[in-house]
Length: 388
Ligand SMILES: *Cc1c(COP(=O)(O)O)cnc(C)c1O
Image (cartoon, rainbow, N blue to C red; front, side):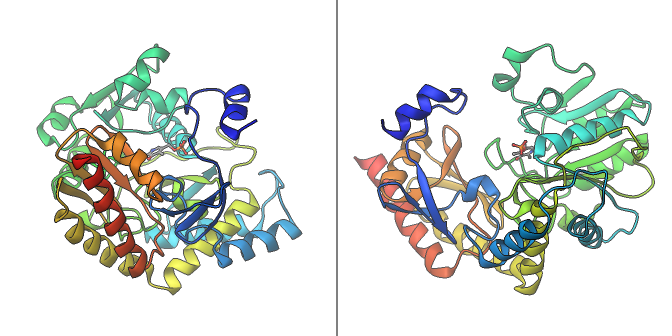
């Protein structure tokens, strides 16, 4: 039986049946079970910050699992402590306190529970925002198609237009516990708010004693050329949630509280059996060390600017949104799905968060040659789709 038939016969159909089966990868390249090579510009959906099979990650994971694979959180272990300290350093805040979990949805679940500890019961989130698929995370996700079949969800969530300061001011009150927001709406098609938006939201939150949670699940871990994606706005959130790239390709999430305003969990109030397991933490430590050592944040910004400049000139492209290596290529026609399919047959992996937007999130280590190859492959693909 072919892999597609086997998948169909044994798995839930929530992803549809994937058209290809991947067997190995190296850096920004992957190969399928027919030996066909692809340039991977989706990077496991913004997870593989150092690409596939990075020697530093492989070594860290191998050494860790040979020594100690999993212990639960009834015992401490060095990779977990080390990673929490690193995250504390990266937030530049010694009051930062980390809770580890396995995914972005779980990180946001933890943030929702922290917000409840303020005594206030209302949460403000944004239209088009995405925070995960579990019941709590879905309750703060502003995308009707994903929510409607699963209602009723958590009560007390209000949605405001992303980027609209006046709307935010109107909806926030003394009953609001937390505002949760992405710095760039990744799943919604890489939507970037105007400069100053986060700063103004921060001020409104401060005026009303409201926690500001930044969901950096997709924009964190250096993806935008900054560690968390809010630094250029000169703000500090009360809560940061991380996952995707955090584990360097392994499953790992984190919810971090900063400063004194966010309540802290007391013993027994939250937990996760696998959360922050030694192997994932070892991978995350190796990824952070490599990003720092190679000054990758600077390279990410340079790579992003190169792509933006080149892609803006491609016929059929009307805008290139985003920062660093999280970019949304806006097409003049609603052909994004056809572009993704054609790109795949041309040996390029990308995805389409909406009808006219292509999202790319290649590994942070992507080199100049691969960037140029991408521009060539993408231009050819778009031309084939638009002009037959
Ligand atoms: C992907 C994503 C999530 C959900 O992460 P999972 O690991 O799939 O649960 C949450 N928030 C944002 C911004 C994301 O991009």
